[in-house]
Length: 173
Image 1 (cartoon, rainbow, N blue to C red):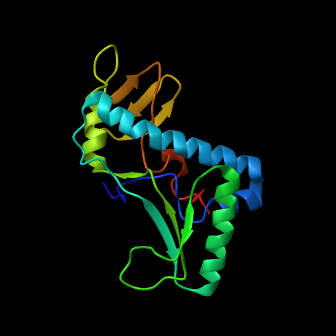
Image 2 (image 1 turned 90 degrees about the vertical axis):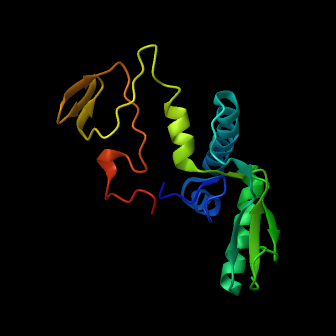
Image 3 (image 1 turned 60 degrees about the vertical axis):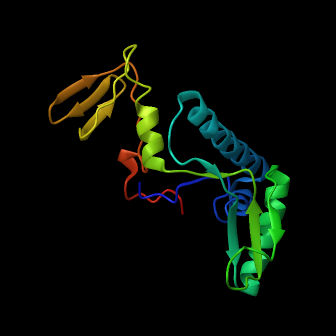
């Protein structure tokens, strides 16, 4: 998986940056979209009986400096305004002291490869197909070009860590 295996709406110190760059409404929309994504995963696990070591686990981010603690406080305020119930604390559950931590309950962890494999198993049938070990060379609204030929499709879903046409653009800075 090359993943943290976390299912969380808490992604480091993101809401304060979104607020600063795009405004409070954008931060609220971002938080709401992430909360909807977190809510969808347990629903899919239950609906399809996916065995993926799915379990509740709080999300946390912490600081070990005074400057970091100030950024944590700013993030906690941005989270409150965005409707994300993060708790500001000094207890991160770590063996070493921290100056501040943000905790978000109601999050999860799982085995991402088992989850995706289980989810992919629900797709075949009714015209849906999953193609593995098939490198996409180009794509458009009509399908995907591969070394083995064109796969024609009414819909193409790109399920990658980075969109194939944006690798190296580092859009998350």
